[in-house]
Length: 124
Figure 1: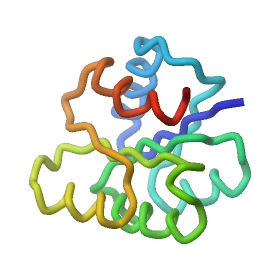
Figure 2: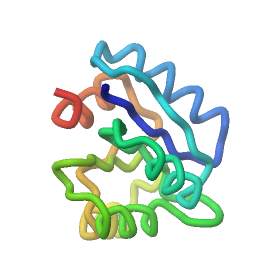
Figure 3: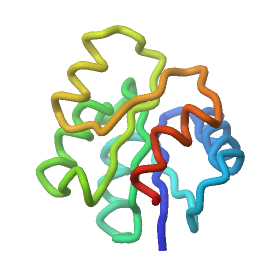
């Protein structure tokens, strides 16, 4: 089983990402959702089949930078991919996410090809 976890505080954005994932043609079994980093940690703890996390950076409770930092204390980067999906085009936020252990990022608005390129290595 290969599952993807989408973490974003916007339910609309989670739906857009789900639809985009279907358009990529990548093979995965399910897409799970969380509204913030705290909820994402709970979902991950209950489902070892999650192979990649697509996370927004700006969220309440626990943001994407805090989430990737926490995930890297529990999961190796090869076992669990973390890809940031963000409107933050700023070099500083992307650099921080990558330094904390993110495997990559895509910037909103994104295309199915951009999502596919970021996820292929984790779902192959």
